[in-house]
Each structure stands twice: as C-alpha cells, then as structure tokens.
Length: 353
Image (tube, rainbow, N blue to C red):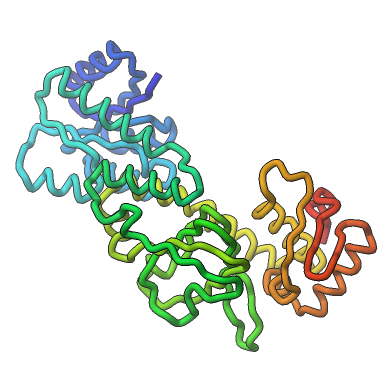
C-alpha cells in the first residue's frame, strides 16, 4: 500500500482529501501545518507528498525547501495544493522543484490521476539501470521521456576508445564533459608537493566520473588515466546540466548513482590518514578485488603496476613491494610478475593496524 503524506491546515479539506485517498487504497498520514508535515516526511518516508501552500508556521514553499535539502526526502514526489491560481505562484512552485500543482477545489478523479502519474514516474526512476552503455541509454531515454530533454540520446554522446595508461583529462584543465565507462577501468589521481602520485578514486565499467569539478565549475583538481584499454562515453557539459536543472526527478536519480562513489572515496581517504601502511596495502588489495572481481569468479587476479598500487596506498613503492613480499610469505597472496592473486580475502579484510 502506497503511503501519502497530506499537509493541509484546513481541517475540513484535510479530512475530505484523506477520505478520498483512503477509499482509493492509499495509507494517509495527515499533518495540520508545514512544520509538522516536514517532520512527518522525514520520520515516515512517504511515497508522495501533497502539500498546501498557505499555512501557518511553515508554508508549502518552506516545506519543499527543507525536504529538497535532505537526501532522505529530496526524491519524494511533491504536489502543491492551493486555492490560488496566479501564474507567479505556479512558476515559483515549479522553480523550487514541485512535481505538480493542483488548485482547490478539484474533483476526485483529477486528484487521483495526478497522484497515479507521479507515482508511476517515481517508480521508473527507482529502477536500477544496468551499468552498461545500454543501461546509460535507458537512463537517458527515461530523462527524455519525462521532460523532453532531446539532447541526451546516444547519438549525442561520443564513445572513445582510449588505450591503457592514457589520460582522459588532466589536472588543471577545464571540464567540458561528464564521463561514463562503457568498458575498462580508470584511476583518478593527483600529485602532491613532492611530485608523488596519490590515487583518490577507482572506477569500473558502469561508473560515472569527472562530475565533481564539473559541478563546481572549476579546473580539474585531479587527473583521470585508464588502467587498461577502455571505452569512455563523454556527455556534453550543457546536456549534463540540462539533465540536472530541468528535471528534478532525474537529477535525484543521478545523485543516487554518484553518492555511493563519493561515500566510498571519503571513507578511503580517512583510512589513508589513520591506518598503518600494512593495513592500507591490505585494504587496497581488498578494494581492488571488491571493485573489479567479476561476478561468479572464484579467484581474483589483477595485473597492477607497483607504481599504481603505491599511489593507491599512499606510500613509497619500496615500502609497498616489501609488504607485498610479507603477504606472499604469509600465504595471503600469490605474485607472478605484475599479477597479484588474492588467496585469503578475509584475512586481508580483517587485518588490524
């Protein structure tokens, strides 16, 4: 049963709408003002919110602002409900990110139709798209279908084949594209004051990258380099911002796609700061396995240069090589040239400082 939060200060209107929704088999959570409604949205996580505009304590615009800034509620479909019909009110609500706008009084079918449409579109955007070029096409096609964003089809993105160890973008250059890995692996790194490379991110097939500096509209603070022969899709900057600014639903979907990458990156940087080098080497190997091991594979072997591994660990190449030798002697890994095979994932993952 879908859950709908109804925020309306007029008791008679609130009870009337609640009755209609309950008869249509929705679970209704009612709030008598904007503040109570915002609190209920965070607590109850409804599937959809219907909110009056003119209310005491916190008006409908304020409710939308509050919820839009909270990752837990930002993607909930939001329908404004008001007796006013001026174009200025409509424009203000839509600029804030409202999904629909109903004027009182409305008939039962108008209300239920609006709810059904918004819930269907929300379900579309909750789908997990495959992390492939075809999955990207599906995602972008959904964006176009919802708001006619005509420049986001596959013929508007370029697929470039980039050899191993080649640069996708360089630190200090200006971003013009959002990148998507159709095939291959990419590392994100920066140089410290002593010219030593520190790898800050690893990306695999199905990942977006290069969006942080693009969003901040500043020069790249890092470089992106392929770890193997790769196929990279470059989505034009203007098309990317059209996706974010013109469609609240799709923007929220994209935020969910990239948020896991950001959390993973922050966690890894914290570990670099507080863990011993031995533990960091172990965690780097586990990260590589978790990131790149193919589903169903019983064994993980990866060819990685010692320079790249030291950049990932944040330690000298000599130190990393010495620790790898220790791990081999302890039976945790096997080494054959540049190839490393993980023998004991659990022992590496649970290694203490």
